[in-house]
Image 1 (cartoon, rainbow, N blue to C red):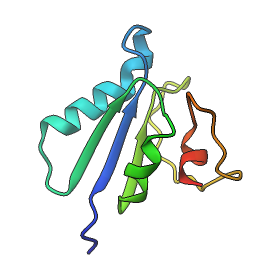
Image 2: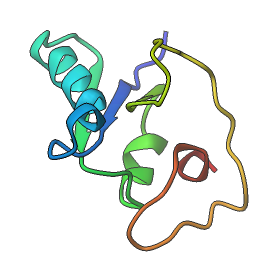
Image 3: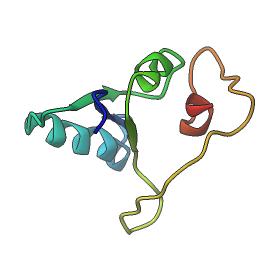
Length: 95
C-alpha cells in the first residue's frame, strides 16, 4: 500500500450548466472526508497541478463529457509534457 494519497481533480465551469459535473462529483467526494484521498476542485486544468499529481499514488480526473453515459478509462501520458501557461489536458499533466 502506498503512503502517497490518491488525488481526485474535478474540473469544469460552474457557469456553463453540465460542464460543472466534474466539480460537483469532486465536491461530493470531498464531503465524504475519505482517508488517503485529496480532492482538488478547479475551473480548468493548469500547469500548477503537476506538482500535486507528482505526489499522488493515483490520479482521477473528473470532467463532463458529451456522451450520456458515465465512463472511466485509464489514460497514459502523451506528448513531451509541454503545456500552455493557462491550461492543460490530463495527458500533458501526466507527462
